[in-house]
Amino acid sequence: MKKLVTILSLAALTTLAGSAAWAKDMKGMWGLGYTRSEFPIGARFWLSPSVGLDLGVGFSAFTPDGGDGQTAFGVDVGVPFVVASTENAHFFVRPGISFADNGAEVGPFTDAVSQFWVSGTLGAEYFFTDSFSIQAGHGILYRSVTTEFEVSPGVTDEVTDSYIESEAFGISSIGFHWYWGGSR
Image (cartoon, rainbow, N blue to C red):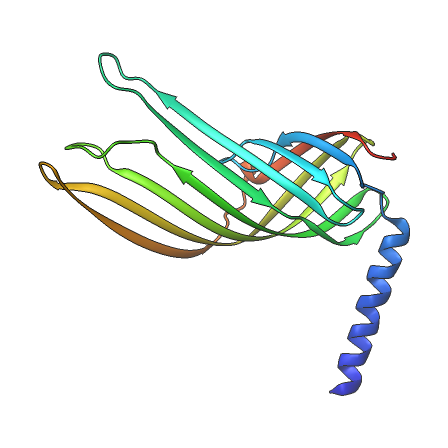
């Protein structure tokens, strides 16, 4: 068993060390693009050749005819860690946290809903040019959803539900970035 663990460890170190030699130097590059459907306006900044910082935002403003409007919003922050690279691609692990709120005030026909997420994503980013990449990823997600609702006029209650689920993979899981800066 020790021999197997030693061989696997050496293979992993060799792979990671070898990939660093071929890796695209991302340090200082920043990109704008689309990362996930809930937070579609995204940005990524590479702090080092193998560690980045992601920020995604999303919002929706709704004003019904003759009614009060509401604005829902969400924010996602993640840190992609490159674990293997080739000349044009990265394989990364991305832990992230997210918060979203539907912006509603509790009333007879509306519930206020807020969500907190913790995600773990495995993904790949492929560079078609020095500036343009496409990425895809999926993983696991913990969601805590708090719903505040009106029990009777003027009396509210809230319920918090927790979910652990896999992130679904589909066409909306494919993102892109257009990069600027860095050493290219």
